[in-house]
Image 1 (cartoon, rainbow, N blue to C red):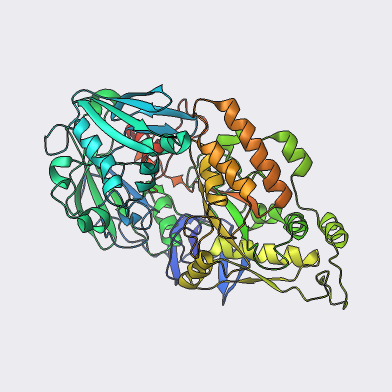
Image 2 (cartoon, helix red, strand yellow):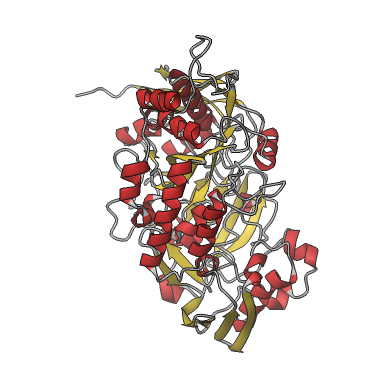
Length: 609
């Protein structure tokens, strides 16, 4: 029998507080110690800008981890979470859910949407709406549930929904304002019925909006100015959801259950009375807290978590690799305006040169899975055309990459080990990601080294976030990673991101490599107009998109970033796993509550003493 030896698991890592390259963490070296049983883990050590992997066993010197709560709450009624906020709370405006997501839960806890979407089943389910249907090609009818109320006791009616949608017509700064390019009017027939009328509707985008546009109370927001609505902080928010804003501090947001929530009779009562969302100082601090049961759920990327899961210190969605659900696709954008990246033959050779297996197995220690060449997440895998993938797909093959380069005229003229362009010019390229995003830093090192092995001179570079983001949007990079292709009800979301058009001076929402191809743009637009119920029509156009995408290779999907989630069952149990009857998403990230995150809270159960 193995004798338990208590020691300290010391993990020295560069702070990375968000979902693998989705925020702007401040680089900081922090040493955190947590008393656990002696184990060997794979950790990341930062030496200047180079990330290397080491195996460490460290000796015991017990140092306590900081308590997670500044106030005293009943522990078995309070859920402690972390991994969504990377800065102090700054806004409770539900129309700012992305870049200002430090108060994640504003959309989901407080404000709600007409529908929810379950990415595990692909089903759009009623939420505030009881039903929604197309009466004809240009008319969409919505029926609201009876008895909906705001948290101040006022009724939530069709007038509130009409008011909310018309904010997009009134203010161009609203993120959903483009819906009014084809939405021509909203009519509140009575308190529970609405009619939306369209001209040439984008059915795919409309279905996506139905579970993303938060409904706000007209009796409060009609008194707000344009500035308050578009960029205001909206302190002390009044919504219709399961939780209420209670308070916040520099390092936490605290929400309390809305005991009068209309949804209790429909969905059930969320288990936690309070939710304390903590902003930890680094991901190793989060690891220590979840191991000790001081955090119930961590949505940080935690290096070494696979070993801890195997040893039973934490639980994960899958018991075996990849341990995590797939949340978004990490895509290598290639700047198609720069030689030789403007050559499709070169781009295709590059795809075969990249050692994605090492990214999966070494950089992530099997916490992620390799992506489909189409870029679509597993939840949308039915829209993959396997025949196209078999014929045009790619996989790591250095010899094949070398052969393809040679066939396209890229040969090593001067004998330095790197190929020159067909015109004899030197090739010197950079692959980038923001400094401090440790998992991506290691990934680009692998991209560079494996490409060099195939004869392509690529160097990894890690500018600070501001410089990286400027290069991304202005199109001045060579190649860079991006993972905005997240869970969705439709493949149109991914392809609209990858092939955003028209090309503008600043590309802020996709097509960062400025791939110019009208045939592709027309296909993406055609997909947007296919009714969401026409699965065969969607597959037909997706097949054409994938054929052109894998022929031209303007982007290279590499791996699926994980839905980082590690949880403790010391206080709360019945977390969603692969063995759950009706699994939901164990995440606190902004935009995921309406994807089943709230149902996770309803399914939780207090641990037995």
